[in-house]
Image 1 (cartoon, one colour):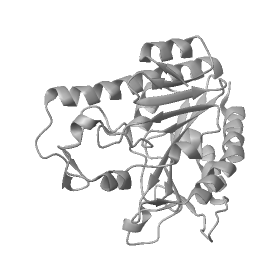
Image 2 (tube, one colour):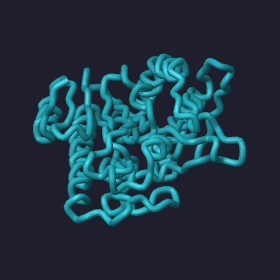
Image 3 (tube, helix red, strand yellow):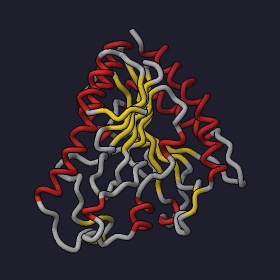
Image 4 (cartoon, helix red, strand yellow):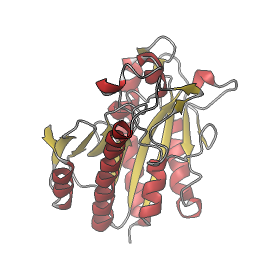
Length: 276
């Protein structure tokens, strides 16, 4: 993996080069093994939290981990194009617009002992801006090359905090073109419901049951590109103990192994249907 400036990453995309890169400031990773009509993203996979903010942060490391989406990058790591955030959403949230990306409170709890300085905020927002410059270059390239593209926007959620039965998988679709892409959404929901998990975990999948797909990543792509479908795909945290801070690697591996075939299969069907 090369350490590259944002400009160098964008230049490589524009030139259709294959590469594995981490941004110069270690805020994001992008690998492109092949230029294909689909990409995977894990915007909340990151856990880094820059040291100058530690003492001022009221939340513990565990509380931050609890609200992040650990292992979501790992679940799609074998696919040809994967972009992921490296920083914790507590530093800046890539799934919120720039004006809301740096939290004052998080999940009903004050985040900072004393308000962040403008300089501290700007440092975080610069990374947010850079991430979206790369996303814009990437989707521009895919649409230019293939006419249409599809992005699997991977997230996870804490299912134990719900006081009702919730699905293993939730697709948030309220901000995509449901008339045009209804069949693609339903076939992805159906495919996810067929995954098998170890430890007798059942697989159910629903649309707009726990989350509606209101994230900035999805909205940014949908508003800037006419021919890209973003599927906000949330897995309940059945792959870890969200209270004991333990990951179940055999469950993560099972998801990764099955998505290795199901995801490109779905992307291929999408392409056949929508490519001009």
